[in-house]
Image 1: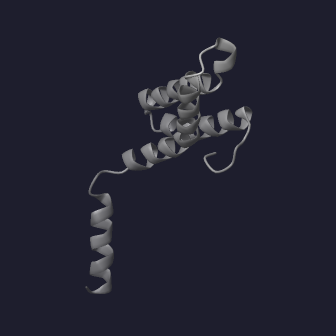
Image 2 (image 1 turned 90 degrees about the horizontal axis):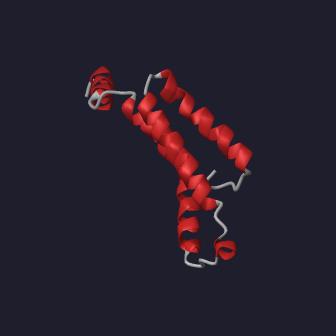
Length: 102
């Protein structure tokens, strides 16, 4: 969604799909935090500063839209980085080096 400007319905579907692995891994609080963050940022992104008579809110709205577009990346990374113990990648690399005889 960061590279393709998609509609709101598509964003919601993708965020829900990205939250499913967190829910399946019983990481309820993380999924809830991301869901609430997405909802708040989406609401801030829909603000119409001109209608409210507060032109400085354009900055808040623009930042909210930018972070909302990056949020699916944060969601997928949080699942990937918390699904494996810290030393897993190093031990896997060590095994592959020992198999090759290094």
